[in-house]
Every structure is written in structure tokens, then in C-alpha cells.
Length: 75
Image (cartoon, rainbow, N blue to C red):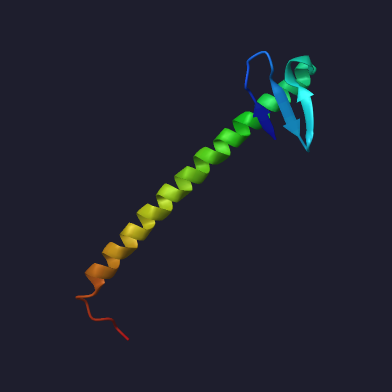
């Protein structure tokens, strides 16, 4: 789904390779489109959060490895 906004008067929804004039769609459909946009934004935000957490975890693992180098393992 993409919403092309080259001009505010020309809001076009592209969905499954078909184009629709967004302003002429029923209000219910416009609300569904808004819901999809919010969901897309939330997914991007959470994907970015996961990336930050992964980097933080990797850094913690590097610190743990450095600290454990001076400790004898039990096996």
C-alpha cells in the first residue's frame, strides 16, 4: 500500500497495483487507509526499537566476553 501525495488535492491510494482517488473513497475506506498508515508507522517504529535492542545486546555480550576472559571456566 502506498499513498502518493505529490499534491494535496491529488491524494492517490495504490493498493494491489490499482489506483484510487483517496478523497472520493467512502469515509469507512478512508478510515481503513488511515489505520493501515498508523499500523505501518508502528511497525517501522518497533523494527527500529528491535535494531537498537540488538545493538545494545551485542555490546553487552562484548563486555561480558571481555570480563570473562580473566575468569577460569569450570569445564
